[in-house]
Length: 402
Image (cartoon, rainbow, N blue to C red):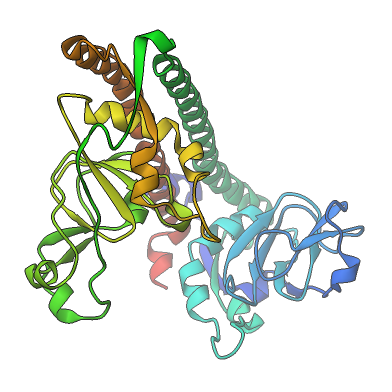
């Protein structure tokens, strides 16, 4: 706030309806036949993703857009290139006394309010007067040159936060991609054996017991309300350790349905539809839905984490064994899938070799998982940082209350 005070240096800030600052322009609709997939200019209608492309532009680069129709009504965007605005997209006209990027940052901070003004009966629609009546701060309105300088400095600061987020996201994404490739490389290398070094067994051969599950009747309060028993669903099986689940069921559900306890440290393979072939390890005792095949691995023959890495590496192959229109698997298919067991005639040496492989792969897996989880957290942190300074710089302190 001290910086903003020095920046303004006593200059007044006038809050004016946006419609008095710039014109809010409605675009012109194009027919589908007029759109192409690779034209010169993107066409915006009902969203910030181009509807298609067109050979002409009706709006210049560096323009603020506000979507006014459809599910994205009220969304604020900014185009750095010339484009065609359809009638599902308002555009703020350029004005000599105002920085378009300044208006963009300000309206992003008002996006929640704008979306709240969308008429939702039938097709969601935002009226132009809503945008035109938004009170907008204009610093030093009687001195356009000084006003633009102040606006420009605020834009510079806020742009630096968005650029930092983009750079950081790119760096972390590149690091994550590199680590995934590294993990895949070592996993393929470590789990490739000469035939004379291994014995090929089925997953069923190295399993003490397999478990399936059930889904208690949906909407039945007696099976879900106040539940304390973890109940795992296939969407939570994502090639990782599972320490918690989002749903709980009651002891009555365990008693009256086919749901059953699955001990910790089982290799769990999803067997249904889009999730088929994905694997994980439950680090807590849990129950599951009927779309999970849970394998309790015989510790005298194989390490459960060794089995997990093998099954995870063969995801595409296992998924490709699915049957029917949905590509479903079943427990028989999973248990018949083969796995190489090193040094089969020397159990102690075999488990030691498996432990060595697991130790290396777990380190790569941990690093990859950490990066995967850290990336959205870091992006969210930078977004909060941007919002904090945006609210400070564009609230103009006492002016925000007005």
